[in-house]
Length: 334
Image 1 (cartoon, helix red, strand yellow):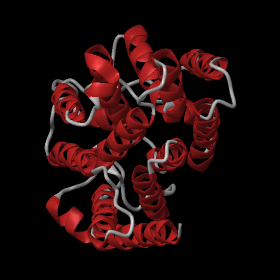
Image 2 (cartoon, helix red, strand yellow):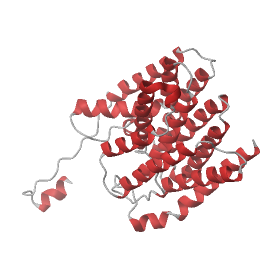
Image 3 (cartoon, one colour):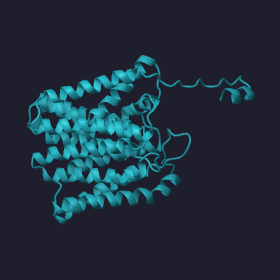
Image 4 (cartoon, helix red, strand yellow):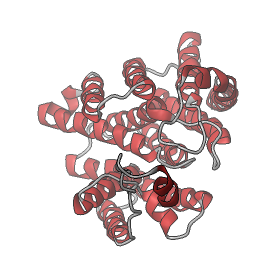
């Protein structure tokens, strides 16, 4: 218990310091959020989260105070983070990230308990959630807030299964994301980036799969969904919105809520509360305190939310200016 508190505190402080220290090098290397046009936001937060989480976990393992016993999971997560870092530095297709994350997931799934079919489904789920967390990084503070809530929930599930090392790892991740939020709360001074988001999503999804090993498949599917309901809802909203509109655009949960008039901080709070509700149901169902209908209520709420936000008018994407248009007309239209 004392080591868990000390480890979480160390991870929080170390992440906060590293995110600030690495900010200038990230700017010099061009490790910035390319989606922002107004100002450069360095993605040193993701690097800080990965380094702090791994450093604290490895130190606990080396000292023998609280062995994580999840070294393989951590190595796979770091490899996914490295792939995401490459995507932050240069453009990488989403399918490459998906395949790379799936390969890493295939190395950590316990096939002897899940079976071949269950293992394949688990690999797909881990990759899906990891990329879902990458998508949540569209708004300041959102991925970090949802990640903290989910980490506590998955950690509680692991603790209930007497997987103490895995529970400690998740508490360290939650603390690291909290330290990151000290710099990422709107308006953000640093960003998470693909590397940090994929790392967090991968650890959360893989740890949840491991914690649910041995439980009934249908019930496990409900718990896994509830623990990551916001990430799933965001992906569903983006896919549905872009298919209906026939084009790409700012169609994530945060974008739609902002169009309803919410402030950046209010958007994070609303989605954080949604994540907390889903995680709470998932944990209670894992403990057997709530029946299988709990996950159905979460799914129904997520579906209603997605359908409601689909009715929010999407922002128009400006047409590219034709080369024949005069500079004066460009200024007037711009």
